[in-house]
Image 1 (tube, rainbow, N blue to C red):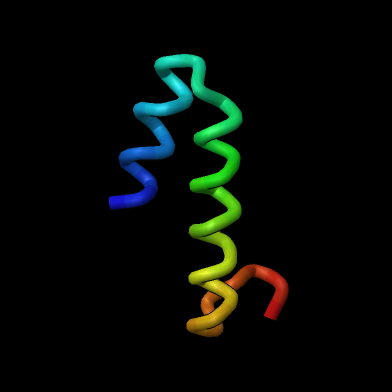
Image 2 (image 1 turned 180 degrees about the vertical axis):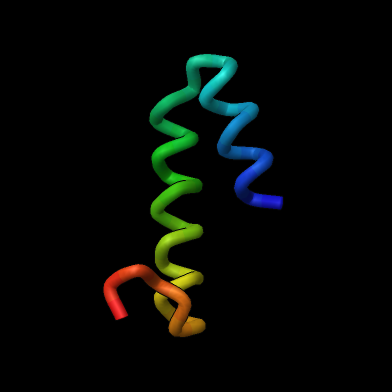
Length: 38
């Protein structure tokens, strides 16, 4: 899952990659109407 990849990336200090995954997750959730802002 993307969340798992993000956690692993953060543990390996790949914060830039983790941030990109986080943004991707946020976009997907907004597309499906499960974003926190709706």
